Image 1: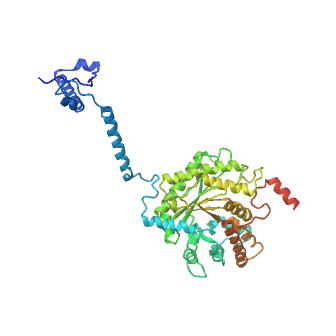
Image 2: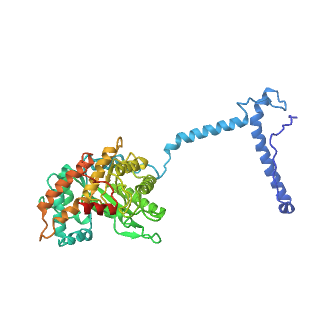
Image 3: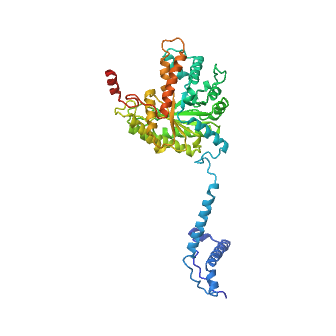
Length: 464
């Protein structure tokens, strides 16, 4: 007879008490059959471990002692390690969907074109002229200085901005309202997008719709228009646009910005960016923190880091191709009603600090919006930021609307028609100031760029 093998593992099959009482002959046979099969499997597994020992001892019951290196436990760990290594080697072949895949769904040529456009927008020393005000917004500005708000007046005014002599030396791009995409230059007879391209200025468009107030947030908002965005972008691209810009306005105040408002707006910006790239347009993402409020500079830093960090995380989670995007963002400033004074250097350091904390190196350029700042303050701060930037890898420039345009509207007061020649001369000088600031070459006058508390400003005005 063969020697009796001592099994290293006891097989215990618990049977619930109620079941024991109802087991019949067939069930008992079935149960015993299952048990026999499990015992056989257990014996086979055991024999694989002790077979070598039995062969070495001529079939003796006690197996030869295994070395620690070849013990069953270490063999199992070794096999597990090999499986993990194999899994690790194969991991890159797995598709991870959109999350953090760097626009993997885009072709090589699509990525190259997006990067080409983004790099052109981020041309050192050049910036963006933002002329994307809707008919109602620019109409209010016209009517405030006595200009009638007609489509023709809007067309002539914007043609002056585009065709001012020397403008292409300072501008890499122009953000247009959809209305302007389909208007023509009476100089060239071409649609404005084509005319701008001929001058070396890239045309883009504002595709978002109206602001919507989030219920229960004390007035915080999101932008509408994502549902039909792809369809509109196709039309705008066909009309000549090569990029788009989506603005998400936010405020700093009691309990604001809330986590809900941050997540809602940053996810909207990320989804907008993803749709833009899918349609072949470079997305400019614009989280815009208002200057309103009495918050200090330190509070502004915390809020902006939180907002921008959420933005970049959302963009990565959505699989946005970061090299094919541009950031348009507010300058980090204390609130207009803040009682603490700050120098222009302190404000510039705050902006550089926020960029270093969370701005991805992959994004080629940052274009600061003016957001209620005067041209003098905005230029002083931008120039100082560029002087203090040290080894920051991004192009830091401007995308200004009101800072450049509000002084132009003042020239219209008391005149029957738009003084286009006079406006063009002033605009050319403003663009030179903005371009110098983008190069860090603009030298502020006096207290330009500093935050002076409201009471101090009034006293300063009285003294003057």
